[in-house]
Length: 107
Image (cartoon, rainbow, N blue to C red; front, side):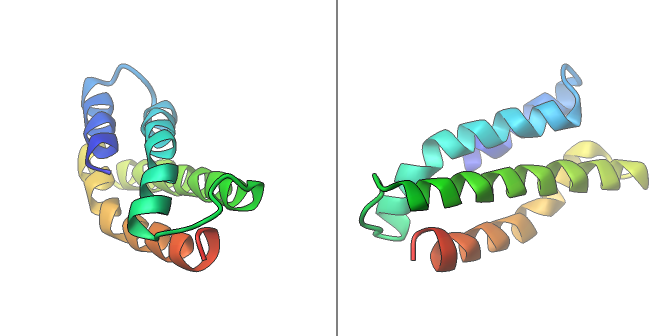
């Protein structure tokens, strides 16, 4: 998560891409790294090669991406700097992601 948040902060600060693309890139990195790491190391899940947990994880990561992009845009809409909005969202998104992974994806 540290890597993906660093990538997001760099992309937002650089203004090279729009918020939606910045969040998509960081979420893609998180998705690629996260499934095996979180599944095996955090939740000690078995059967990660089955399609159900993978599909659930992909759906969750899509929802997380949309929430992150919408939250940053909403913050920017009320005058909050994009980087600050992104940082402020981290605890909320982390709680949502952890709960969904624990009770739905890797149960």
